[in-house]
Image 1 (cartoon, rainbow over the protein chains, first blue to last red):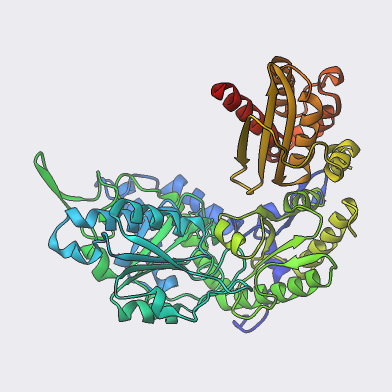
Image 2: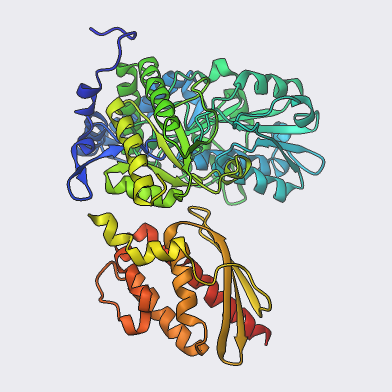
Length: 425
Length: 146
Ligand SMILES: Cc1ncc(COP(=O)(O)O)c(C=O)c1O
């Protein structure tokens, strides 16, 4: 038995991920440093999906036959295990297509509140109300709020960044005011890995009666997260960033809020009573899961959560921290490299963005790719953050449980290679 | 090595010493194009003298591929009738969409043939076409305004 304090046996873990043993670009060993975009899946997850399809596949919540029963049990069983993993109750988790859909669900449902019953009054936003976001947001937790503001006449406000890429919280009360209806912010930046002080923002929002919406895409896969303890009202994350399938995301909502929130997408499976004149809606989570849902993906995400729990999320977190420290150290030792965001690993997850003087990120990414190293280049769906940090775009390495210190070294060597190739070393 | 196939010397030369770079007056129309996946951008101006493209000037932020292809563009179109410039554009677009499957014609594309290797990398094709999209748009605007 290993204890949670023991370091990860990464070599053993890597054997669970078939893709990591393939080669790319003419026989180069794959160095996958792009888990922030999407993570790879262990055989345990792939097997769970396949087993579901081979043994239990049926439409869930629609039928009295044995397969329908089993499929429904598998689907709801996955929901329960995922709920346990993030500190939520069964009824507080809604399956979505991805995190992006989760944010849109909340934003559109709030937009529908004005024409819903009195129980939805707390969600209504309109002229004079304010919606607060941050300059650090992924577009997924920014554009839906811009759109809600545009549709309702509310005003969008945002927290700015400090020069090293952390939230500027020097004057919280001027941003979050009694007019604020929603505060939407990320737990951990997908670009810089910066971890935000959820407690400070939740306290400020509560003081003025505003709702909080947390982007947990980069926190849930990499650190122990308990939504109930964090005290946020809503949170959204994606399965594909946490060893699970694509095509499934999770929206968390405090039970009392989900019960009062009007629906976003309507149709089958989300109703209570349908007449030609109008319909009433099922209680959550069904109210927010219209139509035939994804099934093997939910089961796969359940298996991913099991896998993460067995390995131990704290150990994964500690391992990624070591890789981040090594990457920051290695990259800052290369002349001509500018780290974007904080230069230390304090309150920071496993994401390291940087620029190379004289080598455009796209070109750097190409050289790394030719060496088998997969990184992300561009603005990573966080254009405003890049503008704040004076970068047109960046190269970003992100780490997960299966990455090694060797791979960090390969990255640093690859950066030198890129400098050599473009004649700037 | 694959990298050299993509980054031909010609491309690196144009990248380091771009032709026609900088925004100039006078001009008939200007186009701003951006690649939404990476944020690369180009602003490109066209001056027409009747049917002849008399100047193309540009400024932008981008990778070596987008900068070099815009530099090559100026060589290919300046001094030529619009119709001929568009033929070259069509040939270049066809080359970029070929996934390395067609042999470019040096008489038509001159230095542009160096981008044949880039066409094997679908993610970079947009980079190579950024300046050309701006050129097409700017010519359309200047003709629309005329
Ligand atoms: C911080 C953050 N928020 C939101 C998203 C959007 O997730 P998805 O594209 O799976 O909806 C991502 C990933 O792309 C992310 O990293």
